[in-house]
Image (cartoon, rainbow, N blue to C red; front, side, top):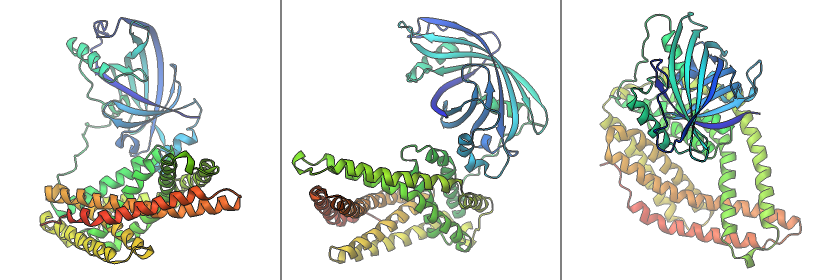
Length: 498
Protein backbone atom coordinates (compact mmCIF):
# COMPACT_ATOMS: atom_id res chain seq x y z
CA UNK A 1 0.00 0.00 0.00
CA UNK A 2 1.38 3.39 -1.03
CA UNK A 3 1.53 6.37 1.33
CA UNK A 4 1.26 10.02 0.32
CA UNK A 5 2.84 13.04 1.95
CA UNK A 6 3.53 16.63 1.02
CA UNK A 7 7.22 17.44 0.90
CA UNK A 8 8.27 21.06 1.40
CA UNK A 9 12.00 21.51 1.01
CA UNK A 10 14.71 23.76 -0.33
CA UNK A 11 18.07 22.89 -1.84
CA UNK A 12 21.31 24.84 -1.59
CA UNK A 13 24.74 24.75 -3.16
CA UNK A 14 27.57 23.74 -0.85
CA UNK A 15 31.31 24.25 -1.26
CA UNK A 16 32.03 21.26 1.02
CA UNK A 17 32.64 23.55 3.99
CA UNK A 18 29.82 21.85 5.85
CA UNK A 19 26.71 23.15 7.51
CA UNK A 20 26.77 26.62 9.11
CA UNK A 21 25.64 26.98 12.70
CA UNK A 22 21.82 27.14 12.63
CA UNK A 23 21.19 27.64 16.33
CA UNK A 24 20.83 31.33 15.58
CA UNK A 25 17.64 30.72 13.61
CA UNK A 26 14.59 32.02 15.51
CA UNK A 27 12.83 29.13 17.23
CA UNK A 28 15.77 26.70 17.05
CA UNK A 29 17.29 25.80 20.40
CA UNK A 30 19.32 22.81 19.27
CA UNK A 31 20.73 21.12 16.19
CA UNK A 32 20.67 17.37 16.83
CA UNK A 33 23.13 15.18 14.95
CA UNK A 34 21.53 11.99 13.57
CA UNK A 35 24.61 10.61 11.87
CA UNK A 36 25.34 9.68 8.28
CA UNK A 37 23.20 7.40 6.11
CA UNK A 38 24.11 5.90 2.75
CA UNK A 39 21.44 6.22 0.07
CA UNK A 40 21.43 4.40 -3.26
CA UNK A 41 18.71 5.47 -5.68
CA UNK A 42 18.00 4.43 -9.25
CA UNK A 43 15.74 6.76 -11.22
CA UNK A 44 13.44 5.54 -13.97
CA UNK A 45 12.09 7.27 -17.06
CA UNK A 46 11.24 6.65 -20.70
CA UNK A 47 13.89 6.83 -23.40
CA UNK A 48 12.73 10.37 -24.28
CA UNK A 49 12.59 11.36 -20.58
CA UNK A 50 8.88 12.18 -20.43
CA UNK A 51 8.73 12.14 -16.64
CA UNK A 52 11.63 14.55 -16.32
CA UNK A 53 10.05 16.87 -18.88
CA UNK A 54 6.89 16.99 -16.75
CA UNK A 55 8.83 17.55 -13.52
CA UNK A 56 8.06 14.05 -12.16
CA UNK A 57 10.62 11.80 -10.50
CA UNK A 58 10.36 8.05 -10.04
CA UNK A 59 13.01 6.17 -8.10
CA UNK A 60 13.80 2.99 -6.24
CA UNK A 61 15.98 3.74 -3.21
CA UNK A 62 17.70 1.69 -0.56
CA UNK A 63 19.14 3.01 2.66
CA UNK A 64 17.68 5.50 5.08
CA UNK A 65 14.40 5.40 6.96
CA UNK A 66 12.14 5.46 3.88
CA UNK A 67 13.68 2.88 1.57
CA UNK A 68 11.32 1.90 -1.23
CA UNK A 69 9.78 3.34 -4.36
CA UNK A 70 9.12 7.08 -4.50
CA UNK A 71 7.08 8.99 -7.06
CA UNK A 72 7.09 12.79 -6.76
CA UNK A 73 4.74 15.29 -8.38
CA UNK A 74 5.47 19.03 -8.52
CA UNK A 75 2.93 21.21 -6.71
CA UNK A 76 4.71 24.57 -6.47
CA UNK A 77 8.34 25.74 -6.27
CA UNK A 78 9.90 23.74 -3.45
CA UNK A 79 6.70 21.75 -2.87
CA UNK A 80 6.07 18.21 -4.09
CA UNK A 81 3.65 15.43 -3.32
CA UNK A 82 5.51 12.18 -2.68
CA UNK A 83 3.93 8.75 -3.09
CA UNK A 84 5.89 6.06 -1.26
CA UNK A 85 5.54 2.31 -1.79
CA UNK A 86 7.45 -0.50 -0.05
CA UNK A 87 10.69 -1.75 -1.50
CA UNK A 88 10.23 -4.41 -4.18
CA UNK A 89 12.04 -5.73 -7.20
CA UNK A 90 9.62 -4.27 -9.73
CA UNK A 91 7.63 -1.06 -9.98
CA UNK A 92 4.44 -1.39 -7.89
CA UNK A 93 1.27 -1.40 -9.99
CA UNK A 94 -0.27 1.52 -8.12
CA UNK A 95 2.71 3.75 -8.98
CA UNK A 96 2.76 2.52 -12.58
CA UNK A 97 -0.87 3.60 -12.89
CA UNK A 98 -0.04 7.11 -11.66
CA UNK A 99 2.44 7.68 -14.50
CA UNK A 100 0.47 5.90 -17.21
CA UNK A 101 -0.83 9.12 -18.80
CA UNK A 102 2.80 10.15 -19.39
CA UNK A 103 4.41 6.78 -20.09
CA UNK A 104 1.59 5.04 -22.00
CA UNK A 105 3.09 2.23 -24.10
CA UNK A 106 6.71 3.26 -23.61
CA UNK A 107 9.09 1.31 -21.39
CA UNK A 108 10.36 2.67 -18.10
CA UNK A 109 14.07 2.03 -17.75
CA UNK A 110 16.86 3.06 -15.37
CA UNK A 111 18.29 6.42 -16.40
CA UNK A 112 20.40 7.66 -13.50
CA UNK A 113 21.90 6.18 -10.36
CA UNK A 114 22.57 8.49 -7.42
CA UNK A 115 24.64 7.40 -4.43
CA UNK A 116 24.64 9.85 -1.55
CA UNK A 117 26.21 10.13 1.86
CA UNK A 118 23.74 12.17 3.88
CA UNK A 119 24.80 13.85 7.11
CA UNK A 120 21.49 14.41 8.92
CA UNK A 121 20.66 17.08 11.51
CA UNK A 122 17.33 17.90 13.13
CA UNK A 123 16.43 21.47 14.03
CA UNK A 124 14.38 21.30 17.24
CA UNK A 125 12.56 23.84 19.39
CA UNK A 126 12.42 24.28 23.16
CA UNK A 127 9.89 21.43 23.47
CA UNK A 128 12.08 19.02 21.54
CA UNK A 129 9.76 19.21 18.53
CA UNK A 130 11.46 18.76 15.16
CA UNK A 131 11.04 21.86 12.99
CA UNK A 132 13.01 20.66 9.98
CA UNK A 133 15.49 18.04 8.84
CA UNK A 134 18.72 19.26 7.29
CA UNK A 135 20.85 16.97 5.19
CA UNK A 136 24.30 17.64 3.80
CA UNK A 137 24.48 15.34 0.78
CA UNK A 138 27.67 14.27 -0.95
CA UNK A 139 26.26 13.01 -4.25
CA UNK A 140 27.77 10.81 -6.95
CA UNK A 141 25.69 10.56 -10.13
CA UNK A 142 26.04 8.02 -12.93
CA UNK A 143 24.03 8.15 -16.14
CA UNK A 144 22.82 4.69 -17.08
CA UNK A 145 21.49 5.41 -20.59
CA UNK A 146 22.39 7.76 -23.41
CA UNK A 147 26.08 7.76 -22.48
CA UNK A 148 27.71 6.91 -19.18
CA UNK A 149 28.69 10.31 -17.88
CA UNK A 150 29.38 10.86 -14.20
CA UNK A 151 29.17 13.86 -11.88
CA UNK A 152 29.50 14.66 -8.23
CA UNK A 153 28.58 17.57 -5.98
CA UNK A 154 27.60 18.48 -2.44
CA UNK A 155 24.31 20.12 -1.54
CA UNK A 156 22.35 21.10 1.53
CA UNK A 157 18.71 20.07 1.71
CA UNK A 158 16.29 21.54 4.26
CA UNK A 159 12.94 19.73 4.57
CA UNK A 160 10.14 21.16 6.69
CA UNK A 161 8.69 18.83 9.32
CA UNK A 162 5.15 17.58 8.68
CA UNK A 163 2.66 20.27 9.59
CA UNK A 164 5.34 22.93 9.95
CA UNK A 165 5.07 26.58 9.01
CA UNK A 166 6.72 27.23 5.61
CA UNK A 167 7.82 30.63 6.92
CA UNK A 168 10.33 28.78 9.07
CA UNK A 169 12.24 27.85 5.92
CA UNK A 170 12.60 31.57 5.15
CA UNK A 171 14.37 32.05 8.48
CA UNK A 172 16.68 29.11 7.80
CA UNK A 173 17.46 30.45 4.33
CA UNK A 174 18.31 33.88 5.71
CA UNK A 175 20.87 32.27 8.01
CA UNK A 176 22.32 30.13 5.22
CA UNK A 177 22.65 33.11 2.89
CA UNK A 178 24.40 35.06 5.61
CA UNK A 179 26.95 32.22 5.76
CA UNK A 180 27.51 32.36 2.01
CA UNK A 181 25.26 29.43 1.05
CA UNK A 182 23.11 30.02 -2.03
CA UNK A 183 19.97 28.29 -3.36
CA UNK A 184 20.61 25.55 -5.87
CA UNK A 185 19.81 26.24 -9.51
CA UNK A 186 18.52 22.66 -9.85
CA UNK A 187 15.06 21.76 -8.56
CA UNK A 188 15.99 18.11 -7.98
CA UNK A 189 19.03 15.88 -7.77
CA UNK A 190 17.98 13.81 -10.76
CA UNK A 191 17.44 16.97 -12.83
CA UNK A 192 20.96 18.12 -12.03
CA UNK A 193 22.33 14.67 -12.72
CA UNK A 194 20.66 14.48 -16.13
CA UNK A 195 21.99 17.91 -17.05
CA UNK A 196 25.54 17.31 -15.85
CA UNK A 197 25.91 13.82 -17.32
CA UNK A 198 24.22 14.48 -20.66
CA UNK A 199 26.24 13.37 -23.69
CA UNK A 200 27.59 16.35 -25.62
CA UNK A 201 27.20 20.02 -24.67
CA UNK A 202 24.33 20.79 -22.36
CA UNK A 203 21.40 22.48 -24.04
CA UNK A 204 18.63 24.29 -22.25
CA UNK A 205 15.16 23.41 -23.53
CA UNK A 206 13.86 25.97 -25.97
CA UNK A 207 11.18 28.23 -24.58
CA UNK A 208 7.96 28.36 -26.60
CA UNK A 209 7.80 31.48 -28.78
CA UNK A 210 5.51 34.31 -27.74
CA UNK A 211 2.10 34.11 -29.45
CA UNK A 212 1.93 36.36 -32.52
CA UNK A 213 -0.75 35.02 -34.83
CA UNK A 214 -4.32 33.95 -34.12
CA UNK A 215 -3.17 30.35 -34.45
CA UNK A 216 -0.44 30.88 -31.86
CA UNK A 217 -2.97 32.05 -29.28
CA UNK A 218 -5.43 29.25 -29.92
CA UNK A 219 -2.69 26.62 -29.81
CA UNK A 220 -1.33 28.01 -26.53
CA UNK A 221 -4.78 27.49 -25.00
CA UNK A 222 -5.05 23.99 -26.48
CA UNK A 223 -1.63 23.02 -25.10
CA UNK A 224 -2.57 24.28 -21.65
CA UNK A 225 -5.74 22.16 -21.55
CA UNK A 226 -3.94 19.08 -22.85
CA UNK A 227 -1.33 19.48 -20.12
CA UNK A 228 -4.09 19.90 -17.54
CA UNK A 229 -5.57 16.53 -18.52
CA UNK A 230 -2.20 14.82 -18.22
CA UNK A 231 -1.39 16.48 -14.90
CA UNK A 232 -4.80 15.71 -13.39
CA UNK A 233 -4.82 12.03 -14.36
CA UNK A 234 -2.91 10.91 -11.22
CA UNK A 235 -5.09 13.11 -9.01
CA UNK A 236 -8.26 11.55 -10.43
CA UNK A 237 -6.88 8.07 -9.81
CA UNK A 238 -6.17 9.04 -6.19
CA UNK A 239 -9.64 10.53 -5.76
CA UNK A 240 -8.20 13.96 -4.93
CA UNK A 241 -11.01 16.43 -4.18
CA UNK A 242 -12.20 18.42 -7.21
CA UNK A 243 -9.79 16.61 -9.56
CA UNK A 244 -12.57 14.95 -11.57
CA UNK A 245 -14.31 18.28 -12.04
CA UNK A 246 -11.11 20.03 -13.11
CA UNK A 247 -10.23 17.30 -15.59
CA UNK A 248 -13.73 17.44 -17.02
CA UNK A 249 -13.45 21.21 -17.41
CA UNK A 250 -10.19 20.77 -19.36
CA UNK A 251 -11.92 18.40 -21.80
CA UNK A 252 -14.75 20.90 -22.22
CA UNK A 253 -12.37 23.76 -22.83
CA UNK A 254 -10.67 21.78 -25.57
CA UNK A 255 -13.95 20.82 -27.26
CA UNK A 256 -15.19 24.37 -26.98
CA UNK A 257 -12.01 25.75 -28.52
CA UNK A 258 -12.28 23.39 -31.49
CA UNK A 259 -15.87 24.49 -32.10
CA UNK A 260 -15.34 28.21 -31.52
CA UNK A 261 -12.30 28.51 -33.76
CA UNK A 262 -13.01 26.44 -36.90
CA UNK A 263 -11.34 29.17 -38.98
CA UNK A 264 -8.10 28.46 -37.11
CA UNK A 265 -8.14 24.67 -36.60
CA UNK A 266 -9.57 22.38 -39.27
CA UNK A 267 -12.64 20.63 -37.85
CA UNK A 268 -12.13 17.71 -40.20
CA UNK A 269 -9.20 16.87 -37.91
CA UNK A 270 -10.49 18.19 -34.59
CA UNK A 271 -14.03 16.77 -34.73
CA UNK A 272 -12.96 13.13 -34.19
CA UNK A 273 -10.79 14.25 -31.25
CA UNK A 274 -13.68 16.33 -29.89
CA UNK A 275 -15.95 13.29 -30.06
CA UNK A 276 -13.51 11.33 -27.90
CA UNK A 277 -13.21 14.24 -25.49
CA UNK A 278 -17.00 14.25 -25.18
CA UNK A 279 -16.89 10.56 -24.35
CA UNK A 280 -14.23 11.16 -21.69
CA UNK A 281 -16.19 14.08 -20.21
CA UNK A 282 -19.22 11.80 -19.99
CA UNK A 283 -17.26 9.17 -18.08
CA UNK A 284 -15.87 11.82 -15.75
CA UNK A 285 -19.33 13.30 -15.34
CA UNK A 286 -20.76 10.16 -13.78
CA UNK A 287 -18.61 10.73 -10.72
CA UNK A 288 -18.81 14.52 -10.75
CA UNK A 289 -22.60 14.60 -11.03
CA UNK A 290 -22.82 12.22 -8.10
CA UNK A 291 -20.62 14.52 -6.02
CA UNK A 292 -22.72 17.58 -6.83
CA UNK A 293 -26.04 15.88 -6.17
CA UNK A 294 -24.89 14.32 -2.89
CA UNK A 295 -23.53 17.62 -1.59
CA UNK A 296 -26.67 19.49 -2.58
CA UNK A 297 -29.02 16.93 -1.04
CA UNK A 298 -26.99 16.80 2.18
CA UNK A 299 -27.00 20.60 2.40
CA UNK A 300 -30.74 20.59 1.87
CA UNK A 301 -31.23 18.17 4.74
CA UNK A 302 -28.96 20.22 6.99
CA UNK A 303 -31.16 23.24 6.36
CA UNK A 304 -34.41 21.56 7.38
CA UNK A 305 -35.91 21.86 10.87
CA UNK A 306 -35.96 18.59 12.79
CA UNK A 307 -39.77 18.51 12.54
CA UNK A 308 -39.55 18.14 8.75
CA UNK A 309 -37.22 15.12 8.87
CA UNK A 310 -39.36 12.02 8.57
CA UNK A 311 -37.89 8.55 8.27
CA UNK A 312 -34.28 7.38 7.72
CA UNK A 313 -33.61 10.02 5.07
CA UNK A 314 -29.91 10.53 5.78
CA UNK A 315 -29.23 6.80 5.86
CA UNK A 316 -30.99 6.33 2.54
CA UNK A 317 -29.01 9.21 1.01
CA UNK A 318 -25.73 7.64 2.19
CA UNK A 319 -26.71 4.27 0.75
CA UNK A 320 -27.77 5.85 -2.54
CA UNK A 321 -24.57 7.90 -2.75
CA UNK A 322 -22.19 5.09 -1.86
CA UNK A 323 -23.80 2.68 -4.31
CA UNK A 324 -23.40 5.17 -7.14
CA UNK A 325 -19.91 6.11 -6.03
CA UNK A 326 -18.53 2.59 -5.91
CA UNK A 327 -19.69 1.77 -9.41
CA UNK A 328 -18.59 5.05 -10.94
CA UNK A 329 -15.14 5.02 -9.32
CA UNK A 330 -14.39 1.51 -10.53
CA UNK A 331 -15.61 2.37 -14.01
CA UNK A 332 -13.58 5.58 -14.15
CA UNK A 333 -10.38 3.81 -13.14
CA UNK A 334 -11.02 1.24 -15.86
CA UNK A 335 -11.53 4.06 -18.35
CA UNK A 336 -8.19 5.65 -17.48
CA UNK A 337 -6.49 2.27 -17.86
CA UNK A 338 -8.22 1.56 -21.17
CA UNK A 339 -6.95 1.68 -24.72
CA UNK A 340 -9.49 4.27 -25.83
CA UNK A 341 -8.29 6.86 -23.32
CA UNK A 342 -4.62 6.29 -24.12
CA UNK A 343 -5.38 6.62 -27.84
CA UNK A 344 -7.07 9.94 -27.10
CA UNK A 345 -3.92 11.20 -25.37
CA UNK A 346 -1.86 10.15 -28.39
CA UNK A 347 -4.29 11.99 -30.67
CA UNK A 348 -3.93 15.14 -28.58
CA UNK A 349 -0.15 14.83 -28.78
CA UNK A 350 -0.38 14.60 -32.55
CA UNK A 351 -2.73 17.55 -32.80
CA UNK A 352 -0.35 19.73 -30.78
CA UNK A 353 2.75 18.51 -32.63
CA UNK A 354 1.22 18.96 -36.08
CA UNK A 355 -1.73 21.33 -35.68
CA UNK A 356 -4.27 21.35 -38.55
CA UNK A 357 -4.00 25.10 -39.10
CA UNK A 358 -6.21 26.84 -41.62
CA UNK A 359 -5.54 30.04 -43.53
CA UNK A 360 -6.98 32.33 -40.86
CA UNK A 361 -4.52 30.93 -38.30
CA UNK A 362 -1.87 33.21 -39.78
CA UNK A 363 -4.13 36.24 -39.38
CA UNK A 364 -4.08 39.00 -36.81
CA UNK A 365 -5.53 37.92 -33.43
CA UNK A 366 -7.53 41.13 -33.03
CA UNK A 367 -9.51 40.27 -36.15
CA UNK A 368 -9.72 36.48 -36.20
CA UNK A 369 -10.29 35.80 -32.50
CA UNK A 370 -12.69 38.70 -31.97
CA UNK A 371 -14.86 37.50 -34.85
CA UNK A 372 -15.17 34.02 -33.32
CA UNK A 373 -15.98 35.36 -29.85
CA UNK A 374 -18.64 37.70 -31.21
CA UNK A 375 -20.29 34.81 -33.02
CA UNK A 376 -20.54 32.78 -29.80
CA UNK A 377 -21.86 35.80 -27.90
CA UNK A 378 -24.63 36.47 -30.45
CA UNK A 379 -25.73 32.83 -30.33
CA UNK A 380 -25.81 32.91 -26.52
CA UNK A 381 -27.93 36.07 -26.60
CA UNK A 382 -30.40 34.36 -28.94
CA UNK A 383 -30.66 31.23 -26.78
CA UNK A 384 -31.32 33.20 -23.60
CA UNK A 385 -34.02 35.25 -25.31
CA UNK A 386 -35.70 32.09 -26.62
CA UNK A 387 -35.60 30.42 -23.21
CA UNK A 388 -37.12 33.38 -21.42
CA UNK A 389 -40.00 33.48 -23.89
CA UNK A 390 -41.03 29.92 -22.95
CA UNK A 391 -43.41 29.28 -20.05
CA UNK A 392 -41.92 27.65 -16.93
CA UNK A 393 -41.64 23.88 -17.28
CA UNK A 394 -39.60 21.17 -18.88
CA UNK A 395 -39.22 22.94 -22.25
CA UNK A 396 -37.79 26.01 -20.56
CA UNK A 397 -35.51 23.81 -18.43
CA UNK A 398 -34.08 22.26 -21.60
CA UNK A 399 -33.67 25.66 -23.27
CA UNK A 400 -31.89 27.11 -20.25
CA UNK A 401 -29.58 24.10 -20.18
CA UNK A 402 -28.67 24.76 -23.83
CA UNK A 403 -28.03 28.42 -22.96
CA UNK A 404 -25.80 27.30 -20.10
CA UNK A 405 -23.69 25.21 -22.45
CA UNK A 406 -23.37 28.14 -24.85
CA UNK A 407 -22.40 30.43 -21.95
CA UNK A 408 -19.53 28.06 -21.16
CA UNK A 409 -18.45 28.03 -24.78
CA UNK A 410 -18.53 31.83 -24.95
CA UNK A 411 -16.54 32.01 -21.72
CA UNK A 412 -13.86 29.61 -22.94
CA UNK A 413 -13.59 31.32 -26.32
CA UNK A 414 -13.08 34.63 -24.53
CA UNK A 415 -10.51 33.07 -22.18
CA UNK A 416 -8.48 31.83 -25.15
CA UNK A 417 -8.66 35.28 -26.72
CA UNK A 418 -7.85 37.28 -23.58
CA UNK A 419 -4.04 37.32 -24.00
CA UNK A 420 -4.58 38.87 -27.44
CA UNK A 421 -7.68 41.03 -26.93
CA UNK A 422 -7.11 42.17 -23.36
CA UNK A 423 -9.67 43.70 -21.00
CA UNK A 424 -12.73 43.39 -23.24
CA UNK A 425 -12.32 39.64 -23.65
CA UNK A 426 -11.47 39.21 -19.98
CA UNK A 427 -14.63 41.09 -18.99
CA UNK A 428 -16.76 38.99 -21.32
CA UNK A 429 -15.28 35.77 -19.93
CA UNK A 430 -16.09 36.92 -16.40
CA UNK A 431 -19.66 37.89 -17.34
CA UNK A 432 -20.24 34.65 -19.23
CA UNK A 433 -19.03 32.76 -16.19
CA UNK A 434 -21.64 34.55 -14.05
CA UNK A 435 -24.38 33.51 -16.48
CA UNK A 436 -23.01 29.98 -16.57
CA UNK A 437 -22.99 29.82 -12.77
CA UNK A 438 -26.59 31.03 -12.49
CA UNK A 439 -27.82 28.59 -15.12
CA UNK A 440 -25.69 25.89 -13.54
CA UNK A 441 -27.56 26.36 -10.27
CA UNK A 442 -30.80 26.04 -12.22
CA UNK A 443 -29.66 22.81 -13.90
CA UNK A 444 -28.46 21.42 -10.57
CA UNK A 445 -31.97 22.00 -9.24
CA UNK A 446 -33.44 20.12 -12.20
CA UNK A 447 -31.11 17.17 -11.61
CA UNK A 448 -31.67 17.25 -7.84
CA UNK A 449 -35.42 16.98 -8.32
CA UNK A 450 -34.89 13.93 -10.49
CA UNK A 451 -32.74 12.39 -7.77
CA UNK A 452 -35.40 13.19 -5.15
CA UNK A 453 -38.02 11.40 -7.20
CA UNK A 454 -35.71 8.39 -7.40
CA UNK A 455 -35.08 8.44 -3.65
CA UNK A 456 -38.77 8.87 -2.87
CA UNK A 457 -39.64 5.86 -5.01
CA UNK A 458 -37.03 3.75 -3.20
CA UNK A 459 -38.30 4.93 0.18
CA UNK A 460 -41.91 4.21 -0.74
CA UNK A 461 -41.02 0.71 -1.91
CA UNK A 462 -39.31 0.12 1.48
CA UNK A 463 -42.36 1.34 3.39
CA UNK A 464 -40.66 4.57 4.53
CA UNK A 465 -42.10 8.06 4.68
CA UNK A 466 -41.61 10.18 1.55
CA UNK A 467 -42.61 13.43 3.23
CA UNK A 468 -39.10 14.92 3.52
CA UNK A 469 -38.32 14.23 -0.12
CA UNK A 470 -41.41 16.19 -1.06
CA UNK A 471 -40.36 19.12 1.14
CA UNK A 472 -36.92 19.19 -0.51
CA UNK A 473 -38.50 18.91 -3.95
CA UNK A 474 -40.64 21.97 -3.28
CA UNK A 475 -37.65 23.94 -2.10
CA UNK A 476 -35.71 23.01 -5.24
CA UNK A 477 -38.62 24.23 -7.37
CA UNK A 478 -38.47 27.60 -5.66
CA UNK A 479 -34.69 27.81 -6.08
CA UNK A 480 -35.09 27.19 -9.81
CA UNK A 481 -37.76 29.89 -10.02
CA UNK A 482 -35.42 32.38 -8.36
CA UNK A 483 -32.66 31.57 -10.86
CA UNK A 484 -35.04 32.18 -13.74
CA UNK A 485 -36.19 35.46 -12.21
CA UNK A 486 -32.58 36.62 -11.75
CA UNK A 487 -31.44 35.73 -15.28
CA UNK A 488 -32.66 38.88 -17.11
CA UNK A 489 -30.82 41.11 -14.65
CA UNK A 490 -27.61 39.12 -14.88
CA UNK A 491 -27.78 39.01 -18.67
CA UNK A 492 -28.31 42.78 -18.90
CA UNK A 493 -24.85 43.21 -17.42
CA UNK A 494 -23.14 41.12 -20.13
CA UNK A 495 -21.47 43.03 -22.95
CA UNK A 496 -20.00 41.49 -26.05
CA UNK A 497 -16.81 42.67 -27.74
CA UNK A 498 -17.12 46.10 -29.29
